[in-house]
Structures are given as C-alpha cells and as structure tokens.
Amino acid sequence: MAVKPRTSSDASSALVTEVVAAIRSEPGEGMTALAGLLADADVAAAEVEQLLASVQESQQLTARLRRRATELEALFSTARELVRLQDVTDVLRRLVERAHELMGTDVTYLSEVENTGGDLRVRYSVGTVTPEFRDLLVPAGFGLASLVAQSREPVWVRQYTRMADAPHDAAIDAAVEREGLVSFLGVPLAVGDEVLGALFACNRFAHDFTPEQVLLLSAFADHAAAVLHSARVLADSAAARARAEAAYQELQRHLEATQVASSIHEQLTAAVMSGATVVDLVATLSDRLGRRVWAVDDAARPLDASIGARSGLPARALLADAVRESQRSGHAATVDDGRHRWLVVAILGADRVLGAIVAEDQEDAPVEDVARPTLERAAHVAALVSFKREAVSALRADRRAHLLLGLLDGATGRDAAELGAEFSASITACAVVDVRGGEGALTAAADAVGDDGLVAQRENHLIIAWGVPDATAATESVRRVISDRMRQPEVTAVVGSVADGIPSLREGVDRATRDLRFLAPLGITGATVRSEAFAPYHVLTSATPDAVARYVDDLLGPVREWDARRGTLLVETLGAYFDGGESRRAAAAALRVHTNTVQQRLERVWALLEGDWSDPEYRFRVQAAVRLETLRGRLAAEGV
Image 1 (tube, rainbow, N blue to C red):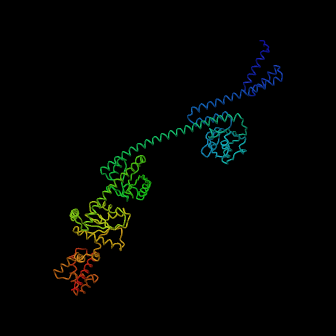
Image 2: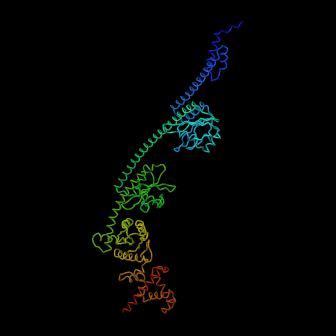
Image 3: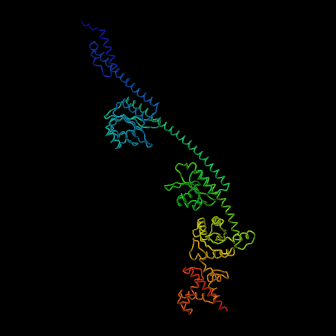
C-alpha cells in the first residue's frame, strides 16, 4: 500500500497541536519536540526563539494559575469549615495540613499564645519527627516566634543558626537542632490589635522564601486567627451564658432560702408569743433544718439538761473562738475540727454574750443558703426570749429577795408573815456567797436556785435560804454558776443548817457571814464549805450571850446531866484526860484514882456522846467544850 505524501496542511496542523500541548504542559515540558517541528517547518531562527519564549511564559502562567486555583480551593475549604465551626482542634489541624501540602515545606506548625506573659507553645504540627518540638514552649522575647508576635509582620530566615534579629534560647536552639530545621518562615495570627499566635513553614535546608509563599502562608494564618478568635468568642459567650445561668440559679436558691428562712422565722416568732423558751426554739430549728441544734449559755453549757454535758458539741476552746468571731461580725461563724463542722451564732445581749446557738453541718444540706440566715435570725429571737426571761426573773428575784431581807431584818406585814409561815416548815439550810462587784449575780443565783429557796443580796454577799436535801451540793452548783457568770473563780460560799425556822435562819446567816470573814485569812477561796466546820470558833467570834453555853450543851449536855443526877465527875475526868495528852495513867494520877476507874468513866462518856470518838476533829471539839466548861466553872467560882 502506497504511503500518501505528507502535505503542508498536515504539518501545520501538527505544529499547532504541539504548540497548544506545550502551553498546557508544566514549565519546560514539550519544548524539545516543539523546537524540532519548528525547525522542520523551516521557521526562521528568530521566530523560533520568540515562539519558544512565548510558550514558556504561557506554561509558567498556566502553572501559576493552576497552583493559585489549588490554593484558592484549599482556602475556600478552610473558609467553609470555619463557617461550620464545630471542633476547633480538628479545623486547625486540617488547616495546618493544607498549608503544609501547598507550601511544600518539610515542616509546618502553629504556635498559640499561652498566657498573658506572651509565651507561645506549639499546638499543631505536620512533618515533625521529635516529640520535644511538638510541644515546644517559646518564652516571650526569645526566638523567631516572639519576633513575629512583636513585629506583627511576616519574618523569614534562610539559616536559623545565623538569626540575629531575636535573642536565642538554649532550649529552643536544641529542639530546632534535633528536628534538623534550617530555614523558617513565620507569619502572625492577629485579630485587631491582639496577636493570638504564629504559623510557620520550615525546611531542613537553606531556602529563600518567595513572596507567593509568604502571601499563601499569611492567608492560612488569617484563617487560623479567625478560627482561634471565633473559638474564644464562643467560649466567652458560653462562659457568659453559664455565668448568667449560675447567677439565675443562685438567685433562685437565694429566694427559696429566704422564703424558707422567713417561714422558720415566723414559726419561731409565733413560738415566742406563746411563751416558748430558747430550748423550744432550738428544737424547732432542729426539726426544720433536719440536723442537731443546741443552745448553750455563756459558759458553753447546754441549756437543755436532758442531753449529755457536751454531746456532739465542738471543744470549748473552738466554740469560744467561734462565739467571739460571731460577736464581732454579727453573723454565724464556722467551726471545723477536721472531722466535723458546725455553725455557731452568738446570742447577744445589750452588753454581753448571753449564749450561742450551735448547729451541726451536713454535707447534703444547704448550709449557706438556709441554715446560716435562719440561725442568725433565730439568735435575734433567742436574745428577745432571753431578755424577756431575764426581765421576768429579775422582777421575781427582786420581789423574793425583798421578802427574804425582810424576814432576816424582822420585818412585819402580811407577805412577810405568810412567807415566814411557809418557810418555817420547809427551810432546812442557808448559805452565804461572797461576790465582789459585777451585775447579774442575784439574777443568776435566783435562776439557779429556782423554787427550792429564796435569794437576796446584802452588800457583797448573796444570801440563800434553802429547802433541799443536800444543801452543800446545791450551794456548790450555784457558786459555780455565779463564778462563771461573774468571771470570778475565787467566789466562796459557806453553808449552814437551819433547825427551827426563821430565828434559826437569822442566826445561821450571821454565823456563815462570820465564817466567810474567817476563810480569807486561811487562804480558802473558790470553794463551798460547811459552817459546821467552824463550830469551835463560832463561840470565840459570836456576840450572842449564851453562845458558849449552847456550844457546851450541844456537845457535853448528856455528860453534864449524868454528873448532875449521879454525882459523878465525868466532865472533870475528861479534862484530866485531855490535860494528860489523852493518857489514862496521867489522868488517874491527876485525879488520884485507879487507872481502871478512869477507863470506866471514859467508857461511860463514849456511851453518852453520839460522835465518832476516832475522829480527831470530833475529839478536838469535845476538848474545846470541856475547856470552855472548865473555864466557865473556874471563873464562876472566883466570882463567888
């Protein structure tokens, strides 16, 4: 088959096709084949050179447009993700990955400003091989990152080790060296006047970055800045919504707590109007708050006598500190001993602390919302109750004190007569308490005594007329109350017996008063003692004419009667026995009788006397009575 000769038309068509193909190719491709076709077509050399130059220029323009289209597509993709911003971390990671692909560098990473000091930390990276660099912290003022943040302009270096525009940091230089990075291009992530970070493209060889690379990386940096700014705005908005919601919930809790506290306050006020006590108030608080609540006096003792002395309460020192803090602030104070917590609010009087309300803390209870304002209101109510109780107690104590003083002073009148008749049968003891200064001792003592007796104050002495089984123990209890209330540990009391109503009461009070004066020289304070302990000395200080005779009769009456009826010498024998140092032989010699006779007489004395002869105190009292009787007899004989 014969080959058809190639025509000039076919050659021209092939040349055009090759030119178009070369223009669409990457720069440099197809240029050799095109040059051959032009030579075969007998094109002039000058025209060939011009045509080839035009094709090369078209190739570069086409490649640039193609690259620009790719870049724009990447930027559009990032913009679309920015609009649909859901996961900030994912968006920024993909942004860095796209920048890495388009920049064609070895490493691309994003650093974010970490704190107010301006330190930057690597957050996202592509192409890194060392873990240290992926979390690298660049202190403010050091390294290329700080230079980008401070200048707010793109910065690049051909060789990092030769960078002199920013101070080097040893840790940063070491991380860069381990990563093998040489050239850097950094652009700022800025929104308005604030720099949020920097975006970097790096190579592991020396490289001069082109303006196109700077612009491309800057475009990605702008998107990254928009992502970070949007994330912060969204976070601030979410935080603002959360704060608003929290404030609303707090307001709602406060309103609910206020309503509950007001309801409890109304209930407490109603209880006060019906005559409730402070103990009743804390019982109501305990029921409404769902926890244990106590009322204590100013000495931290529970007012409710039915509970343990300090069951469940904090230590006295901790409680005292909390009461003082509450007194200063006017609000409830918190006590925490490491195991338990309490709320303590002081009950304040006009010039002193009347006591406190103590509530235990519970982990699942709204302590701050309900308990605190409720307890503070309850303390005000308790103070009013205490004022009322003290006023009533003071009036009652004043009236009863007036009547008791009237009885002691021999007053007459219907009230005195009725009270005297009533107490003539029930009074069994008296007590005198020494108090020095201060107010409130009479009221405190009257409250402690209650209906068991009467209390009056005469100068620095409180006088108590008792009708109790154990007057010594009862007086000691009152003495402690007064000592705590007056802050006077040296308060002293003397208890005396009352044998036959009001006359004996007057004598017992006078005797106890003298005994108090006798205690001071002995150095006895802060105690309760029985007046009977001073019996031998009463006759020495008494102004009563028959004091000695009564004392002797109380102790030696049966012995004297025996001597009077039988004509014996028992009292004389006792005197000789004591003079002889309680020696029977010495007594027999002094009386000029046999020792057996002395023994028989002493046995008779022991049988007649009711005391315990083995008690040295009792023997001393008997000896004092014998000597007084002997002295009285001798003086009477000399007078005759």
